[in-house]
Image 1 (tube, rainbow, N blue to C red):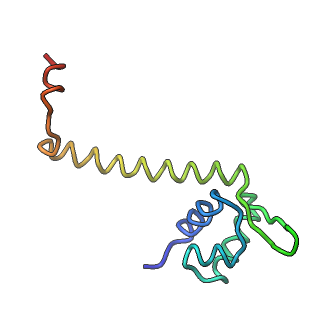
Image 2: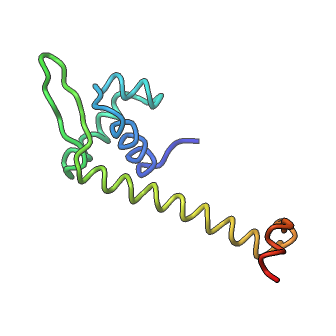
Image 3: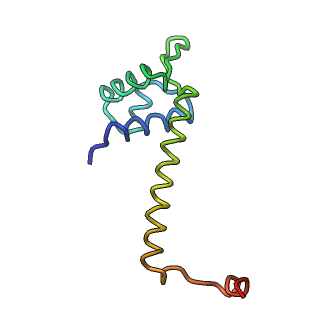
Length: 108
């Protein structure tokens, strides 16, 4: 299944949060098409989430502070969504949660 634009942006931000990369390296890392990665990077640069850095002859892309903040927010949102699903499953099926003797002692 193809990634949505938002998923592509998030994957790029995640990769760049580790270290600045060239388009080719980013494309290889994300297993994506260079043209699409370049297009997505253009949007991220335009919105100041990513910046271009020229180091010698290399053109690297690096995440900005603003990009880090957006990436952290997207990651948090994903974790909260997973937590919501887990809590719903537990509330619908309380038998999924086993009580340990330690827990029972503390409730007396």
